[in-house]
Structure formats: structure tokens, C-alpha cells
Length: 339
Image 1 (cartoon, one colour):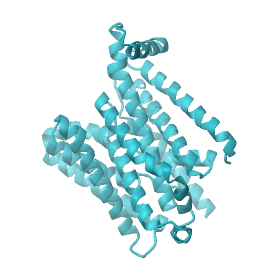
Image 2 (cartoon, helix red, strand yellow):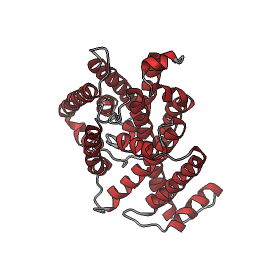
Image 3 (cartoon, helix red, strand yellow):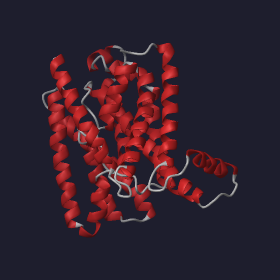
């Protein structure tokens, strides 16, 4: 089923409204509950420059940056999932399964261990390491899967899983060698937003703008890629050059997300597929709708991670994996039945 084009603005507006509600809930609930009215009041006072009660600090310094960061992470992962699925024409392609998240994790871990917790290392070194790891990983996976001259779904997934396990082992090796960083890195690798801060929000917003603007501007060309490389070339698109450019954009947003939140799996798989089922494959709608839906999913997953066992906080990656694992099995069996 797909929604007619005339109704798509209304769907996007509905998703934006749902994201706003999810974000207010994410700020309001946690170890310390804050009434939604107080949340909006604290934000209004911050915008107007008026002073407020001490509870405003909980809202503005802790909850708001965390929720904004969760939304940006979800949007980045969903946009990357849309790009990978379009370029490889495979609904099972996502940053986690293709090993890109693991590559970004290894790069970020190396930077984390080498650069330490300095401001420059955290804001520049870790994202740069994650980007290099993500880009190198997708290049390796595509090279391994395309040795026969074509990219088949099974080869792509097997290469992604093999590379992902190898990189995860290398990451574990780095952590064992650098014992003093092991605890912090292990908790970070499980996926979480405990380290959210305004500088992280600003950095990831820039990354999403840079990595998402080009694919959105080339939405028509992404639609052409669904026809296959040969047909896209016949219609005037340099498919190889375009694919490399889009892979760089996808790797950038994945690296940005992993560098601030660790490994949060399955968002790039579930969200684009679900949105495509409802809205259809037109990337002019699919990209922004997936970004909004991904933001909603991670904001709600982070909220669940904070309240289910409160005051103990679960890593967000556990919450998304509990939902994403069954979804992946359903998607796999659905493809087998359709084959």
C-alpha cells in the first residue's frame, strides 16, 4: 500500500507532530518526573532569557540535549538505511548488518583510546575515526561481495556479517589491550545516550545536514538506482560515481551517530522498510519520512531504556535489538516466501 502524493505532506506533518509528542514525553519522564507543562515552561523561559526554578536545569541541561541527540541519532541511522537499501536494492541492507556500524565502532574505539577524553579528541577525533572505519568497511564489504562482478543479496549479507564479526573481535582486542578504557568503551559500544551534551547535539546536527542534504537533493537519482545500474546509466546517470558519493554520505551519518551513541542496531533496517510499505519507494518522501520515523523510534527506545528498570538504565542498543531481531527474521522469511 502507498499513500497518494497529495496526502504525503499530511503524513509528514503527522510524523513531525508525533515526534514532537515523543520528545516532550522523553523530556518529562525519567528518574525524576517533570510535568509536560513544566517542560514547555522551562523551554519558554530559556528562549525568552527569563530565570526559572532549579528544575529547569534538569530539563535544559540533561533531558533536552539527550532527547535531541536521540532524535538526531535515529534520523541519521534511518537515512543511512534508506541509502543502503536503495543503492544495493536490498531491503535487508542496513548499517548494522553490513558491518558499517562495527567499522565505525572500531574506528571510534581506536580514536577513543588514543585521543582520550580531551575535547578535541571527543568532538573531532572520535567522529573522524568512526567515519574512516565506516567508509573502509563498506568498501571492503562491497569488494568481497562483488568479486563475481555483481552484487547478490546473499553475498552482500554474508560479507557484511563476516566483516562485522571480525571487526567486533578487533574492537574487543583493542579494549583488552587498553584495560583502563575497557569499562567506558564496553558500555558505550552497547549503545546509549548517557554522554549527551549540547556540543554533541550541534556536531551531529551538522553531520546530518551535510550527509542528508545531498541525498535529498538527488532523490530522483536514487529512484533511478532502483531500476539497476545498467538502466540508470542508460538514463544518463553515472551509476558508479553516484553510488560512491551516496556511500560516502551514508558512512558520514552512520559515523556521526556511532561516535556519540555507540552501536544502536536495526533502526536503519526497520524504519525505512516500514515507511516504504506505507508511503511507497519515492525517495522525495521516503527520505524525510524515514528520518522523522527513525527519530521517533530512538527517542521512544531511549525513554523505555530509562524507565523500565528505573533508576537502573538499560543501553538503548538492547531495546532496539529486542525489537529488531524478530523484525529481521520476519523480513527474511517474507523475502523467502516471495522468492
